[in-house]
Image 1: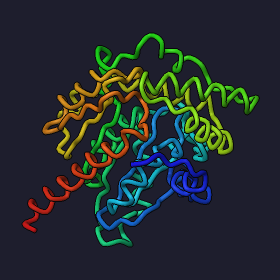
Image 2: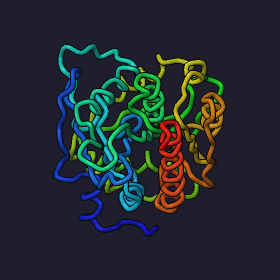
Image 3: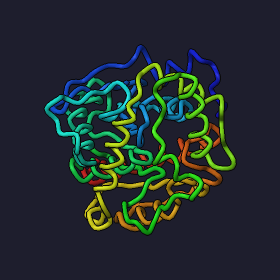
Image 4: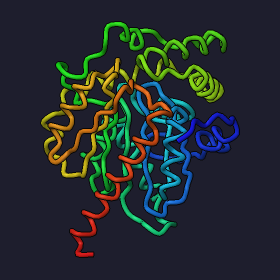
Length: 310
């Protein structure tokens, strides 16, 4: 897989026409649904402070080529999504997962395609936590679960490296575009780890984020939701969803022990360690990750067919 450098192609994959809006009980979610769902749809859930435009375009392109549509949404308090004024600001990860369930029920993204039914759910970082919650909340909506660079919430696993802790404590500047772009570059370098920093891609996605709108206060509320959620280990033991846990072995923000613990907690889960990858999906690892995801999706679909005698 080659790196996507063309600005037009990048925006086509990450920000097609500004996306669409869906009204759900808690507010309005901005989303994009792209590709053809010949084999199904993949829900991509972004992490803390991230926008839906922060996903790897190479990963999205690879999923499209493999016959999967991709559905990516801004979480509440991020990007172009907005909460209703009546919704409390001290929300939980379960509340955020409920937003995604409501989005799926509103869109029914596979309905117009050849493979209707549940979606494959892939969440990275905080998005992995939301994916776990969505699988617990609405297993009938989840054909497979992938927890990417995430953790169980147990305090003794997935600890960040000391040099990366500042990302939790330093809000993004909003008074100057240049200041924000400089912050975003430093943020990317802190997350990418020692092998796969991509300053140009960091600038491109940061420019999109600036244009779409920033919410440091929203990031603080998301972080509070993570902190209040506690250890999900025992809750994860009740899951019966085909699960892949993928984690970079050079992740400086959520150590790989968080992924190992997640795989150990979910019955039947498989663990996939990605060499050299930090807390981003670099283009150099996108093809490898795409292939592993597609194999996981196919196995999950096959298990459903067997269960129904097909």
